[in-house]
Length: 329
Image (cartoon, rainbow, N blue to C red):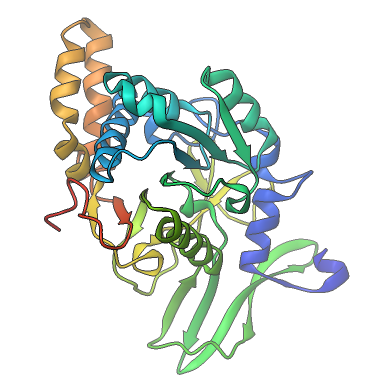
């Protein structure tokens, strides 16, 4: 395509590498776990999804127990988070009676895994447009980091956009003059797709009622920096290596998604009771199994691991009381 049409902006390159119908990374494989390229929190420990389940039940109650309501997961991976969430929600039978599960998922490979994982009825969607008009709880765990970003580079007051081209048969990154109104010298990332989806989620919450829980790695204040990265077999590699064969992500700029309150993942999970739940389940384990189970929770909440890098944002319908544990932020 580059040879035929010329260099393409980074966001288009990312979009094709990840979502091309035939060759896209997410369209052709299960990327999760030890045999894949990366591991997400639901795959690290069941207690992660259980804590999200506790939050959802509490959010539903805080919003007046709407019935029916849509529980929508954006980019649900293997379906592990939803399975753990619904298992934890068995403690609230009325919640399960009212819930209508929906997945927004573009990958046919992952859709198949989700169908195998979920015994409960669920409906699949390619986008938010076909979701039902009813009160909605959105869950988006490591969804926004995989959406395409543009990169702009400021040099001595001049603005350039990063493009991917071909030189001597190899993919190369280059600069094209841009009218982007930048600031100080440095690299800046903009994900218009992320902003559009976040706005669409917020509009639906305002129109129908509900809330959204967004969990991802990133920062709460906009800043210069090149955060686009690629992973293959749990190791970093160049984003230009093997297009369609490696995962490409970037750090999420939470300030561009919403002005809603944000907590670190560690603070959120501790507030939801993850330490107590882990210790209770660990009582039934022994030896290496117990050690690994405790280590998994530590990985999720420790500031030096996932506890600080990952953030949790809560967007709630206008006029509603902020949902625990975000009311104090």
